[in-house]
Image 1 (cartoon, rainbow, N blue to C red):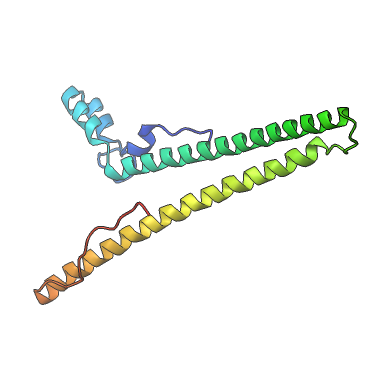
Image 2: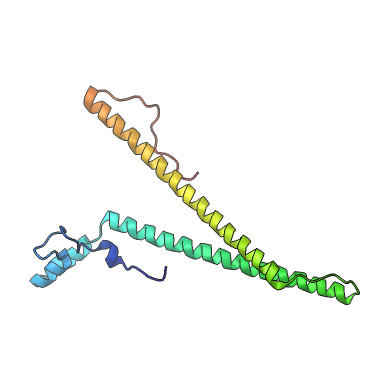
Length: 171
């Protein structure tokens, strides 16, 4: 996620079919025409709902990746701290006359790092599942609305689907 996409990537209308003779966006066309008021209006008009949603999804995904990386790093540091605590405890026992064999540092830290990685992966899978369930609920609700609309247009009566309320996305 080193590459950062700015708002212009998501909101520009510089794609074929966006209007204009040269395929330029409304801002570039207004600027080429020398119309400052039209350029300001075009700057406001270049934001689209799909572009905004795409940008928000991109930012949310970047945030989730950074949070997962932070959690993995935190777990690794916690594992390292646990190893150091164990090492100090065993050292104190050895000083007291006990002959306990010390585990190697790579054994403890390697397994803890792997556990931390797997926990991060599990958390990511849980978030993905929650997001997909939310999307499924939205699509089911939209399908019910479309069926009711079609039924009303075809038969002229309301389709009784019980209480058709928007789904709760918090689950």
